[in-house]
Length: 257
Length: 67
Image 1 (cartoon, each protein chain N blue to C red):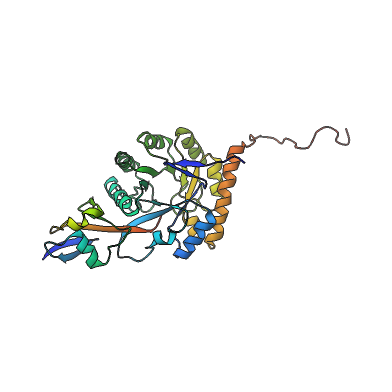
Image 2: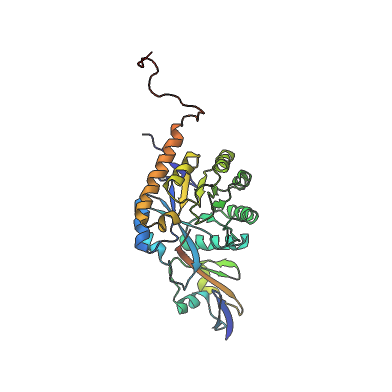
């Protein structure tokens, strides 16, 4: 087997599965899921100190071979997102940021105007910007043009588990940019992750599908296998779809001829 | 005493209170904490010398599970 690594924002990754830490019931459950997933990148959010829910997550991950990727979840404007990214860089000593600018709580869809503004500012400030965006290829190209290190289109609304609602858009988006494409949001189960990879995505980021599964560790293992299977299938070159049957057994020598 | 806002809550503060002293008093001075005042990042190296003016709006954030 040749070595199939992902070059992402200056780092080389063997795993093409990125795991969000949100929704895990405990640090122990999160650690088990991280280990089972084989991931090398785990996202965290930045929140006000004082609340105890989910704090200490970086300590829980400290001895695992993972990069911590802060996000700007909860930010509704470019201004908020830029500040939170700067706070995350200070707190975590990383130039990586998963950029989220989400003003609508019902859909959790990104505001792409604010997103593009924030991405431009953060690239100029030296960040490796990984923006959470819609499945619009034109927006993806704009994000690439301003210097984003990857684009992260949704498959379906965050936390919905609806899978990839518009596979054709994701495939078109993949063709529109040269930076890595990471399918982010909407994954419900393993076949969704495999489909993302078969569509040509370079990686998958998911959280709820694992952390809120009945058995998070087992689902993490399933996602690991699905991402690998989808990646292999995409590289292997699938057969073309046909309207009619095509026998796989030899046609010559059948009885009755 | 002046008044400052820390993570959305009003709080009395000595006129010469620094960021470093605030975090020490609130028990939030630890690694993995970042501070902004009035919408601008204050680097850790500046905490000891940055005095909180009255009406300052302070945000103290740290990493949590999420995303």
